[in-house]
Length: 458
Ligand code: GDP
Ligand code: GDP
Image (cartoon, rainbow, N blue to C red; front, top):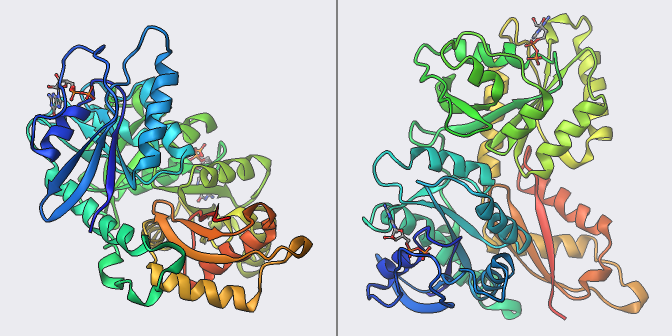
């Protein structure tokens, strides 16, 4: 089993130190001073029983005749192209910088499989930076200390199932799907725990009832860990448990003002809420059931989807409704019509004021989180793909037959799938939707955006 891992990130975050640790020889140059010009270098790495090739993309330092950005971009893109997996390293002590955001963008555009690592996380000095790293929107940061060898076990546990998956999809077009080992591939879902609380944001327009809802969730829990003010400039969070599930609720300026008074969360602007989305795994889009699905609600919901977050739509102030069954039908109908991109996302009714429906909300949040982390095995996907194309073959525009050859899930959080195909430019959008909707129904994936990418195989 073998694969290639690229270590990417801005200068001085500890890429070479990590490379050395993985390769075990002092092959790469480590230097305190940025400015030493280096290029991509490879080594044979071992971690537990894993053997793989590691590429160090250090050497992104400024060269006189080149812009940092240009050089950084080219080297990173090269490393990404050569690798199966990218380990994106940020410096937990320095926190997230604009350069880190540029890297995150490159990785997103390249649709690379990314493991986010916050290095220099030994001791407590890195805590803030680790939390900031959530804002990169690349999921839970792995805490590493390349210098002290901390976090290597966790890295192993992340790489292990990936290695199996990469191996399973390696054979390419000729792949015999029957041979891929489902168990080796299936990733175990980590339910939220005290160590990995579920990251939640509640967004919605003013007066939807966000503060009331958050206060109710916090109020249920006497073991509030208190807001952590000043960790980042633009977001703060509070740890709590919601019906027994450890959660971290992301919030913004409003909470910070009240950093020492936790019994009343201040009103938040919509913009604050949108910022909190970046930190969240699950986003609750809160509607005022009296005036649901207005323009502002649609924009907010669309934003959460575009950002790739798991979404639960909650219709609040349900206590005010008289004809509940009729209203629920009307809500469902508007939801389907106005938010087709969130098709299948759970719609729950709640009353933040009375607390009714919070159990349903809690269940929907947990389910959405699980689905967002879901991995479907390659074998199952390919069986499914042949059934789908048989039931409904892709069109043959101008007589050119589109062949969908092979499919695999390339990442989770949210789930993303790649379909190897011919004439990808001729595949109609509607056919993509047919597949996405099919994935959602057949693999029971409500409440999560699903990304589907066609990759051309000529
Ligand atoms: P690169 O430019 O990303 O390859 O970074 P280097 O590997 O050259 O490391 C830059 C500096 O960070 C060096 O002084 C390292 O000793 C230091 N460093 C690397 N990893 C760690 C770590 O885990 N903790 C701490 N405190 N320092 C580290
Ligand atoms: P925010 O601006 O979204 O934070 O909204 P608030 O939490 O401040 O709530 C706006 C208003 O709606 C307040 O007067 C709340 O008391 C009221 N409200 C919130 N939730 C409910 C609910 O479930 N039922 C009813 N009847 N009123 C609610």
